[in-house]
Amino acid sequence: MRSKKNISAASVLMILTLVLSCATFIEDEQAASLDKYQEGLYRMKQDVKVNDLVLKKGEKVKLMVVVEEDAVKAYAYPADVAYLKADRVLILYMFDADFEEGVFDNKYFHTRLMEMVEPLG
Image 1 (tube, rainbow, N blue to C red):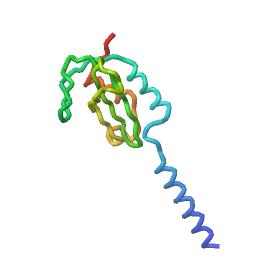
Image 2: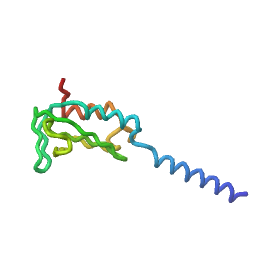
Image 3: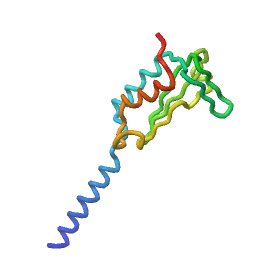
Image 4: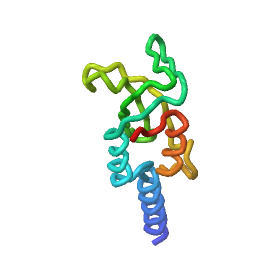
C-alpha cells in the first residue's frame, strides 16, 4: 500500500512539474495583438546602430515583432524599403525575466517600445 502512495505522490509531482514547465510566457492572443505594430509607420526617437546597420533619430521606419518561446523582439527598418529587401535592426529585445513573474505584459512592452519609436499619423 505504501508504494502506491509513493507512486501517486511522485506522479502528481511529475505532472505538476511538467505543467509548470510548459507555462507560456506569452499567450496566443497577446502574440496576435502585437501584429498591430507591424501595420503602422513610426519615427525613430534615437540613433540605433547594430554592426554596420544604422537607423537615425527622426528616420521613418516600420516595425516587425517576433515572439519566441521566452522572449519578444522588435526590429525596425526604413519605411521606404520593401519588407523583404530591408535590413532590419533589432531595437528592443525583452526576455521573460524582464517582465513581472516572467509573464508578458503588453502595456510594459508598449512603454519600452515607445522609448525607441513614436507612431506617425
